[in-house]
Amino acid sequence: MKLRSLISLCLAGASITAMAQGYKDGIEYYKADQFKNAKELLNRNINNADTDKAASYYYLGCISMHEGNLPEATSMFNKGVEANPEYAYNYVGLGAIELANKSPKTAAAQFKQAEKLAKKDLAVYVAVARAYYNADPVAYAEEVEKKMDKVRKSSPNFAPQIADFYMFEGDMAADKSDWGAAAGRYEMATTYDPAATEAYVKGASMYLKINPNYSIQLLKKLLQLNPTSALGQRELADKYYDTKKYKEAVAEYAKYVQNPNHFKQDEDRYAFLLFFSGDFNAGYEFASKLLAENPTNFTAQRYQFMNAAQLPEMKDQLLPMAEALIANHNDTNRFAAIDYILISEELKNAKQYEKAVALLEEGIKEMPDNSQFYKNLAMIYVEQNMIAKAADVYLGYMASLEKATFNDKVQYATFCYYGAIEKKTTDATRSAELFDKATEIANDLATTYTTHPRGYKLLGDIKVQRADQAEVATIAFDEYMKACNVIEASGNAAQYASDAKVVFNYLGNYYLEQNDVETAKIYFYKYLEIDPKNDAYRAFVEGLK
Image (cartoon, rainbow, N blue to C red; front, top):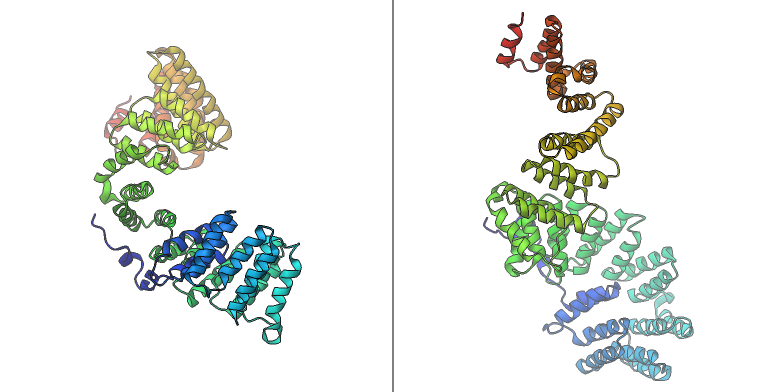
């Protein structure tokens, strides 16, 4: 299959997302308290021509402090000062270092330098307040309030018109689990700065459980104002995913993964969503694109195969893909349940039974509660005419279920029955065990599902197989007659065609054995009602005298 551009498939009209905010995305992630992601983006963009290095180093220093690495934080703040001595915030960072080192007077001098450089930037006072708060909210409560009051008094009507002020108040409220107050302050932040990404993101996270639709609306509003925000794109895609709106999540991830500031790990989720949503062609092409960029990307290799397995035109390419996955599978490159199932199925189709069995046995060892592994393994043994072995494996399937269904029980009873027949001439003890288990399940079916003939019919089948030749024609009469009564009571014998034909044929032959030809014909004609085109059978019946 030739690869087409993913953009032409999924992203028509969304070319704006190919742009990015550079280091500003890292700052947004920091302000949203997503420090690991912030660090990656700030470092990724540090040498870009349009990067404000002084700002980037400040936030990298703050992240280092959050990680408890004070020497690294100090280095970052100093690099920031070197990049731009007029940028006030790195002095705030150096002051925070002094607070951590229990030197409040030296810290105050650094803060004073920052405030001197800040001029009319009131957000610097909020940053200083945060530094005190982060160091010790109780010990420095007075200092925190002084800085916040400075911002109030410098603002019209004591209502600060900067987002940072309300974000800090919201964060302090959230620390006290006062979610209502926090949400209100985050909303105030967007009032004074409609592009305050962190306010929408934090607000959306708070509303997700109580009002998921409003959470999504907040993020959609953010992207209307700031459509290139990687954080906004990612958060909206995640919220759709969290609320099980997978179609919308796919569309948003499609935009997000075109943003240069997306994260590689999010490509995996997008690949998963394409598969999960049933867009197998797009999923295959996206995974192939990732593999072309990095041939060692095991996750992309998995999703390429998973999607290809759903596409009829890829049928001839599946086995090599499955074998390549097995070759690359190890303790680091691990399989999920779907991998074990799809790959073993392909090996089975190629009649590589030993490999298929080994793979499913590994899956069972890794995930012993996964019932599908047992079921698929049993069917591989069936395909090899190893029915007794299939019965053994199917027992594991039954044990893994919270509650077995009618079909589960029928399948298990059937495996036991045919497994017992398989072992009749080679292992009489094992055959008897399997017949006993089949009888146990058939009795359960007969007593639990009284309006279905299968239980009675199976009991009759088992009696016939266990009987001496002389007894075969009469030994199962009671069981088959009970099955016949259930079939006729249904008013639609055709719905039980396979069971009904066996039952009617046996009963007809039973009455022949009793020399009651007329009654025998009644049951033989019932058989023909289900199989009217069976001319040989009809000729046999009509030839009876």
